[in-house]
Image (cartoon, rainbow, N blue to C red; front, side):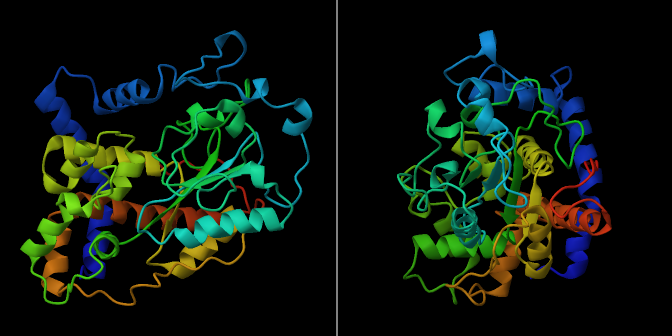
Length: 370
């Protein structure tokens, strides 16, 4: 197991490591575009040519994979309707939960849906697979714009950066987020949960290999299972590097797997960095610190019922200590970096909320970026 000092070292070294990676990239690949420019270019290619516009409406309504204006789909009465309860997500600014697989988020998905409906919200204003009527468990975000224009609560295994193509924008509004003044084009509030990488890998392995006895497993055996095709879904989604899969905005599964299997590659490290940069836009709940996570969640979503961050199938790790340590240093190496950043991020976000004199569900514009 990694010690508290090791976690602190990871966290304290994150900023210096990111600066080092940026410099290394520029020196090694000069005069190639900077990493951020390259990342944004790839994102635009993936989800539409106008991803970075603050709004697209009227004559600029794109259709296809581009942005669109919710004003074209929703009446002014609906847009300006008063909230039914304190903190209710609005059509102007929905709530999006990026659910990382095997990170104890199923309870939160369920709670978001059931509490929202119990307080008077409409089922049609939610989009939560397995819970919202008509939305099957494994469904990706739908394309029809009319289906998403009125949605106020979204919770699913979604990659960061594709939401705007489905929920659209409201023309002319300023969508500055709470956490990063420079990233001012999010038209929604977002949150995520993150779990210790080795615990997450073990939970995932248990799903794919339920009859396997891991108590005496060697590192080579575990490594082989996690990197095999048997350790992935029918769509090819593996157990590896889940936070990077969700937050790097890379849509290539080979790239994501490479973050784990080739952790020292510059591409792998940059994808992990990109994931941290995007995660910085969302409220981050570290499930290993359930009391702090619940407190932060209460500030962010004051209308939500109690949420448990537990794994009903696993009370303690069954993997030998030496296997866990080797996984932290190999397959989970870059994910450990993201996890350490997330712990530091949650601590800073929670402290800001504790110190803030604003309402229980909003904050002034604090810039707590890198």
